[in-house]
Structure formats: C-alpha cells, structure tokens
Amino acid sequence: MNRALIPLIAFIVLVVFLAIGLTKDPRKLPSPFIGKTAPAFTLPLLHELDKTFSPKSMQGKVWILNVWASWCVSCRAEHHVLNSMIKTNKVNLIGLNYKDEVADARRWLGRYGDPYQLSVSDVEGLIGIEWGVYGVPETFVMDKKGIVRLKHTGPVSNKDVEEEIIPLIKLLEKE
Image (cartoon, rainbow, N blue to C red; front, side, top):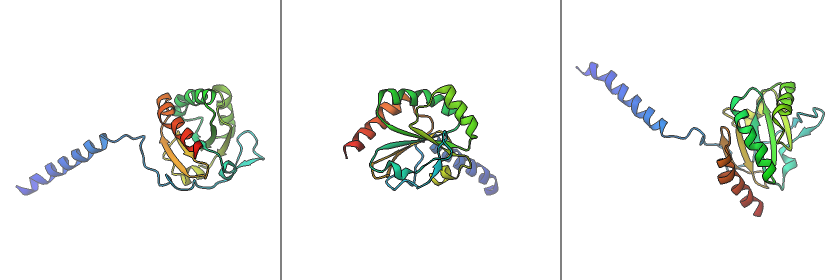
C-alpha cells in the first residue's frame, strides 16, 4: 500500500514546486553584481574594430549596458523602445553585441537604427558570461562609481523605461 502512495506524493510535490515557480516573474532574475563593481572588460568597438572600450572610461558617469544580438527576436522587440528612450532622455547607452557576427550586427543597426553611444563586439560571448547574462536582451544600469544598480532581463518596455530605468538614472545622477 505504501509503495502505491510514493508516485502520488512525488507528483504532488512536483505540482507544488511548479505552482510556486509560476508565481515568479522571469524578468526579475537575481544578479550577484547588484551593489558591486561591474566586471571589467576591454572589447573592440563594433564600428571601429581597431579601437576598444572599457567600462573604466565611463567612470564618473551613470550609464546603461544593453546586451543585444542581431539574431535575437526579443532584441528587435525592444529596439524601438531604446531608440525612443535616446530621443527623449539624455542617457549614456552602451551596446554589448553578444555572440554575433560583426557584419550581421552592423547590418542590423543600419536597418533598425543605432541608439547606442557605441557598441562593442563580444563575438565569443565571454564577457556576457562574466556579467552573468542568461540570454539577450539584458540591460544593466551602472552608477558613477561603476557599481551595478539594476539588471533587467528580457526586453525593456516603455513602462520599464518610464517607471524604473529613467527614475533610477536621475537619482544616480544626483549622487
């Protein structure tokens, strides 16, 4: 009799875990970098491969790192939001092109617009891994000291920009 109950109990436990998981917002993935210095890197600029960018060059500025790729469908969905954000707000937006071919990335920005102050090319995806990227798009906000203050997983919406990202940037710029 007890052996017959084991599969039923296992099924009930799985249902409980599934129910708990369904109540979570997948865009609210924790980041071990919140409140810590952003991981350092030096990568070539997407449009000028002989030049490089490092987060150190943003010291003293509040800035956003947006991880994107030309093969990413969700990136296309968020791209018009980024283009709009740049037109209406003064923000330092840096693009991290993730696991993408340079020619494809350049073509994609030419087609859909380039909201980035600059983009860097992470062809191997190693920097994305160091930043704890689960998938693209992901967006990080850094303060003037290079501390990660926000990680947004998934495409940003106009609501995210208006209610979360821009208010945080304005707050950080006052510090």
